[in-house]
Length: 373
Image (cartoon, rainbow, N blue to C red):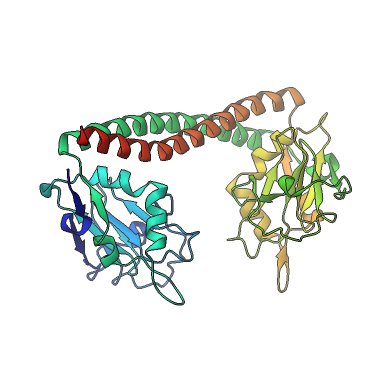
């Protein structure tokens, strides 16, 4: 095996959607997790003729690395569909006849080592970019094709297992959604305010930054992204176990509500602007309430009922006025059990995805070592 420049295996593509054959449904984004994702851009009135075409078995990446958490946004089209990516993206394919498999190169790109390399070799002033010339200048050890294929097969097998597990996960979520929809149609709706109790307890216990959390529009409590150096936490609100917290402001969060449920055994902290509340667990289980708060219908409802000028908010009175069907507590527990099974499987699925990421450096290392032997 020899050290080769990556550019000798790559062919750049600059095909544009000039005739407008592909529409908005074909537009995708490129993530720092090295996946093709639904675009977050507002495409209303956007002319797509300058967008670049990304055919099957092609790669695309965004050269700018300085504003993406020191990572490179990249995707590999393994579908039979042809996509569109932004004109700032660089699209290319691998000439496999020269001895490099596209799938093997994708494993190479998904390693954190490549993110560090791309960030270190990005250049610019206002924005630093990993240019096409820099991509072509990457030095890479290429094992023989049979060895590349061997390690690609290992990865693809594990990926197939994870996707089968994920499809089963979606089936379980569908069961929950159908159950909730049946209740919504059959049981009278009640305002939830009578079963809620707002909490204004502040951090007088001296909890530290390790307890501080953020609230996501995906309706999860997440690690905070705020810089807490020198921040006084005494004004932060406490979120006990089985309590829910949300950020009232809906106008600056993609028209979604940032909300989370503390299903851990820890006492957590959230920003003082958040609203924290618990439920009367003899009448309304917080997990059952979360089934309704995590629905896209609730995001639309909350956004429609947000009020203000500079910032529109869904305040505490608005939350108390929300109406949902509230069945017997035993029925709630049955539904919650299904929902908890879904949450547990979802967490396992996320861990499987993380393991796949961690596997890529091991596979590349193994392929190189086997090729050397």
